[in-house]
Length: 442
Image (cartoon, rainbow, N blue to C red):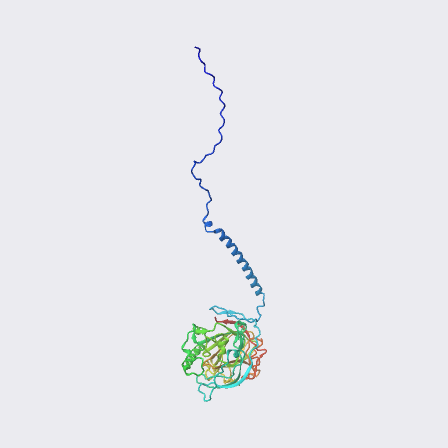
């Protein structure tokens, strides 16, 4: 049988490229969602905080620009303007030294009142009326009783004079016959209360009734006060000896020492401590330097209730009043060769206006000057300081001149002098001293 030949196989088609395939996740498995990581700052809400800070910074900048603009406008105002307002003194424990400048005019103040007669002795045989009980408001308008005051160290005396207001104003614009808070042209005066220590706590000089003149419970306190003041003066008016004595925070600059008879309450009131200090056993210490207006000779003439002491060029040049701590009853001035000075000028103050030794001066020479006034038992107070110029014959001219440190208008209360001290030239033309460097105790 013939062989069967295999039939030829049909030609195979060329292979075609397989279509692209993508990996397929197995069925039944979830695909996790993807998200970017958040920083720690974003988790704390940093974007909102940043926006808030930017807004607050913008507000602060706006406020700063407004404040600077306001301060600049205020600084353009006249620095010597005499506007009304409250104010205070500079702070700091160290003494400050500065040059003087002109002071604004003193505001007008008080009117005169009727005269009255009082006694200075707590043991006087006459019957004394009660001290006036004028209100603070009436005192501010100048309506206060006049007259002299009380005994000192066993002494007695009487005085006649019309009272008047001694100051007006408040805050840093306060002006009184004790001095001014606004001016730098004068002798800085510091008020000390011996009844309290620096911390304001009572000392043995407080006594049983410090506000009552003549009260027996104050006798021991008065004796202690006299002893302490005596130490202070005999140490050369040493401020260091008063380091633990209460001191008023404000300093008043006086262009003259002419304080007519007035209640002793006026001193602490002038220094802004009338609520802290009763009107007894205090002093005011003025000190600085002055320049002589002329070349020649002059002497201090004055009186104080209870005392007035003047130290010129570190020499005691006047000690006058009910208490004479430095010259005694003999009026011996040791710093001037034990010179005995008995000359006086008439007054109705209760004590005469006593004259000190003659002093030689050279024009424009700067000299240290200190004045201390003080009140012992309370009641009434005064302090008057004048000068007398030596005439060509070697004697005093006779007419007293007010000791002045400025030619500015005097306070209304004293511009015409005072009837208790007649024959005083209040203008003192040609003999007005010039204030030099001033030392303020803080």
